[in-house]
Structures are given as structure tokens and as C-alpha cells.
Length: 399
Image (cartoon, rainbow, N blue to C red; front, side):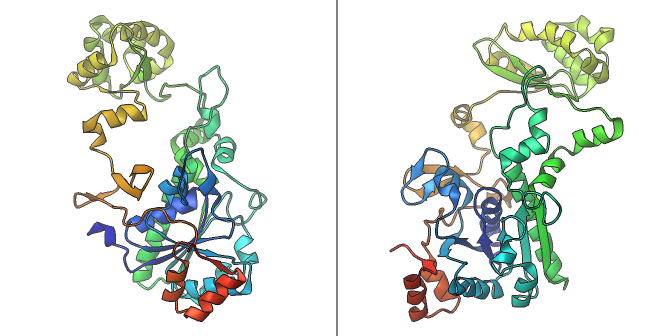
């Protein structure tokens, strides 16, 4: 089955927050043996938000840490470091997302880890890379949305910059890291050995805006905020309809422009000199919107979606999560999984589908230290050693 494609791969997940844990979880979805190494204080993501589930923590933690086992280790102690070194020596991938230099301070820099496992895939997710003036600065998705210019592109033309309402950059960086790890594992099969990988949030953010940034580099024109309108096409954006909802329409070709005019019962508009090409429609967007926006307000979303789809025009309602779940046909497109946890019935899974199946969630998000004893035994520590680690505080396990 597709869920076991990485079943022979062991991943040591020394990450917390969003980007690193999500990357490790995606590898776990593919069958990797992912072991989350959690410090004594726990992953800060466990206390994010307002909804908490049992001894697991926040729904954010639950969403980002499925398909893992959890071992709680104080890496700052000699025994803690010894535990991690043994684990690394038997692992295929080591993931971390500390600031530049932190892994070295812990005694786990790439040079040392490579002596433990020569063909190790060593992947760090950082804010700004491993060197340079910015490398020592702390980073978060919100800060990177600002620094990268993402925030400057979001919002109404005459309004303030706005944050995207979910950790877009963190999740993108996680996907980049997984791509890199998979590429390195593939290369290792042909004898290329281990790899040192670094994915920075800054680079991931800029890559998301590659079209807009390339246009700036070519033209020198700074992009402007366009609210709900697509800066590259017109009409393309969100329009208010009767009943207080919004729909979105995207006209990508001139042929579709003519179809839209027919659907709106405005045949003469198709030949209006101001709107005969996409470039002209973008130039005269305000005049065009002044004509079509009032028409959209005359009918509800259901009417327009039916009419526009019949005319082969790209469109859709602006949905809330409740709307998505209520639309059973739309919800059927989603990889919704049983969370296996009381208090959270379902969760969003991995979007990849292979041979007709989505990846599953064999393991729910773990409690801190839930698998400490089990994992230590698997890596060759005997019962007396494990008891000593727990007694000294080098390791923690739930009873």
C-alpha cells in the first residue's frame, strides 16, 4: 500500500511548532518510522490556540503530529546526548528547526552526526538559512509574512497590509523540506550518500511569489494590493451576490470573456473596445467592475454558480469551513481522517492520493513521552539504563 512506501526509513524529528512537525508528519504519512524527540518543556505548539484535547494538547499539535511516536529527552544532559547519538547512528533522516548554531551547541551539528551515520540525510528548517547576518534572528510565519512581502500583497488597495489567516509559509517550507528529503533518499539509493539540507522560511516565502517577484525584477514595478481581485486577469476575483454571500469568477481567456457577457445578458459588452483583451480589461478593471458588480448583486450565489458553470466559466462560492462540510460532494474530495482521539472526531489528512487511496493516520498525535520506554528499548538500551535515564531526568515518560 502507498502508506508504507517509506516503511524502511527512520526519521528523528527534533522539531517543534509548525514547519518541522508538519514535514515529519508528512513523512510519517508515507510510512516512515518517525520518532519525535521532545524537550522537557514540551513542544510549544501543544499550548497554541484555545482548544485542548486531554493530555495531547492543542488541535494545532494534533493536526501536525500524527503518525509519530514521542520520546521526551533532555538533550542538554550527557545521557540525553548519548541517547540521541545512538538514535542518529541508526536513523536515515534527522530533522531539526532550531536557529543556526543551536544544533552545534547541542553537540549535534552535521559534521558530528555524519560521523555517527555517514549516509544520514540531515535536514534543517530555519528562518533565514545557516549563515549570514539574519541567520541568528528568530523567525515565525507571521514575521516572515511581513519580511518577505507576502503581507504587503494582501489587503484592499487603499487598506493596510494583512496577514494570510493560516501559517502559509511554514506549511510551504514543510513541503519543500519533504521534497528535499525524498530527493536525497532517492539519491542515496544510487550511491550518492548522505546530504545536508537546509530549507529557509524566507526562501520558501519568496518561492511562493515567484511570478510576482520575477515581474518586479523584469519591470521594476512594485506590485500593488488588489484585495480580492487577481492582478493578472480581469474579471477575476470575488463579487458580492444577493443574500450577503460572495462568489468568485475567473476569466482566463477571451473566449470565456464572451461567454461571461452572454451569461450576464450583456452581449454588447463583449465588443466594447475597453474590454476586448485581458490586458485592456486589467487596465480598465474599475470601469468593468462598475458594470458587472451590480448585476451579480441581483441574484443569490446558487443562481450564479449554476448559470456560470453551465456557461463553462470558472467560478465558485466563497465558502466557510461549515459550507465545505455541508457540501457532501465537495467534502468527498477531501482526505478527512479519523483522529483516533476523543474530542476531535476528524482531521485533515495528507492531500496526496496514490492508486486511489489517500495516506492514512495509523497513529494519532502522541502525548509527551508516550513512547519513551518503547523507543529506548528498540535502540538497545536495557531496562536498568532506561530506569536510570528516567530517574536522572535525562528522559521523561508518561505512566
